[in-house]
Image (cartoon, helix red, strand yellow):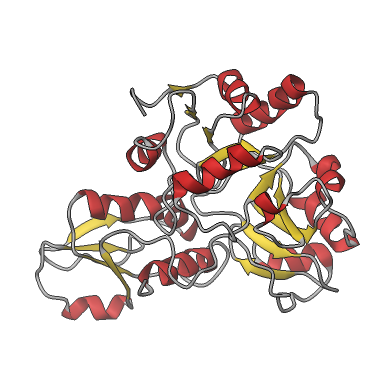
Length: 326
């Protein structure tokens, strides 16, 4: 781009940019997303180019409310409707057979589409204004995380500007919405089978899904979903997932960072990246801590995961992918 990143706190500005076919970085409760109108192939192509994302990786379509789901998806089972009613707006994405409205350029060439209703008030206003500007009630904004493909997702505008500032155009917009409150991406549920299956864990847990639907979570159908590669969410620093007891024997090394719950002590001479008090706090600070490791030029991050309960399962998933060799 020719000038500084165009950052605004006005959802109307972001909606106008989207309506005109430009990109808008948008706050959600999970992470910041790089958004484009879900009906414009050329705008979606720019999303893929800006991220360096392979064209066969599907995007999530964000809509205003559950009443718009039928515009994008068909053959919607009752348990999917129950999930939508219970969890939307919120950090849950449903994968369903697509309608003609969902083009190959959004679905990665699959016959399914991923849809969710975000909970962030600024994002909600953008969707409302975009519908008014375009005259299409179920417009939809496709918005993967606003980072380079495979890297750490952004949870603040500063992360976005550092990551994508050089590839956004003069007519693109970054919408300031404060730090993301959940901190990890949405739970993705495959709803194409007889019972729900989790493709990516998030704040909505297995227990939540089973309680809402009355079904035990099943096996996925094989549908591709965002953020499910073995290596993903990775900083430049090497990430190792370790037990708290292994830190007792860690060597004094100022090039190593530690990420763990507050009750885990930091080995002498190492850099404490964050000390969250709960699994929910861990999820909120996870990506900021990994980015801080790179900002400090650390070589390695030793991450002690939280318990595998609630959103802790999503944190463990993200740490495992960050630690996987690329």
